[in-house]
Image 1: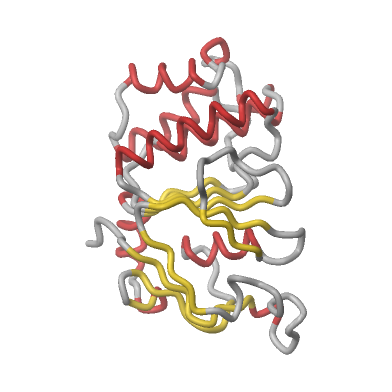
Image 2: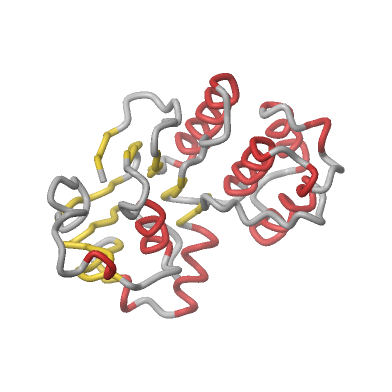
Length: 220
C-alpha cells in the first residue's frame, strides 16, 4: 500500500485529443515538457478554457488515462499502479477538488462532508465545525447541498476535499465562484492544511486565482 508521495513528474505528457497538433503545447509550461512537482510547495497553473487543466488533474488523480508520455509518482509510472494502490493513494496521498464538485444535492452540508470523513477518520467533529464557521457555512449545516448557492457549494466541496490525509492537493478552479473575502478564507484554510501535512498544492485557474502566497506559476 502507498501511503504518501514526495514527487510527481510529468514526462512529455500530452492529452490524446491534442495529438498531431502543437497548438496547445507550443507555449505551454506543462504539456510536452519534463517538469516536477515536489512537496512542500504551491503551484498555480493558469490556463485558457480548453487547454486541458481539468484533464491534467484527472490524469494525476488516475481517473483518466487518455494521454501520451508518462506521469511518475516517486519515479514509478502511474500506468503500473494497481486498483488497490490507486485506492490507497486516494485515501492517504492525493486529495482532489474537481471543478464539478460532485456534491450529493439531496444530502445536507454535513452529510456530504461526513461521507468523506467517515472513510478517512481525518477530522473530529469540532474541527469540521471550525472549518464550517471559517467559511461562513455554520448556519447551513442541515441545508441540502442542492439548495445552496454555487459559491456555498464550492466551499462545502473544499472542506470535504480537506477531510483526508494528503501529500498533494489537486484543486481545479477552487475559487471560481468566490468573492475576494471567501477566496482569502479558502486560501488561508488550504495553506494551513497543506503546511500541517508538509504537502504540495496544485491549483488551476482560468482567471480568478486562489490567493495563495508565492506560488510557482505555470502557464498551460
